[in-house]
Image 1 (cartoon, helix red, strand yellow):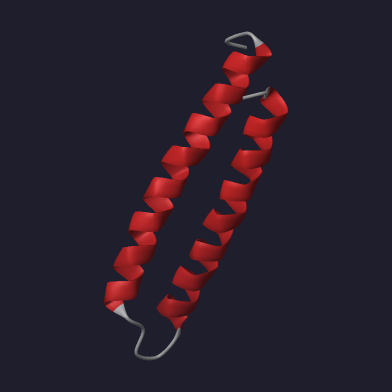
Image 2: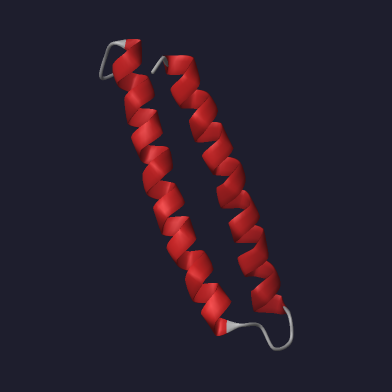
Length: 67
């Protein structure tokens, strides 16, 4: 996978992170928010963060260094 592909994938994942974060924020300010959904969102955020980190590491390797 090229550097550009990895960075594009990381950007897509970050968009998903932002959507999940916004939904979590809505749950926190709304009446009767679902604790189960909040827990699901936190799990999704954790998985997405790991995936973003992996893509950035791939991009760094594809760019040829540890800079």
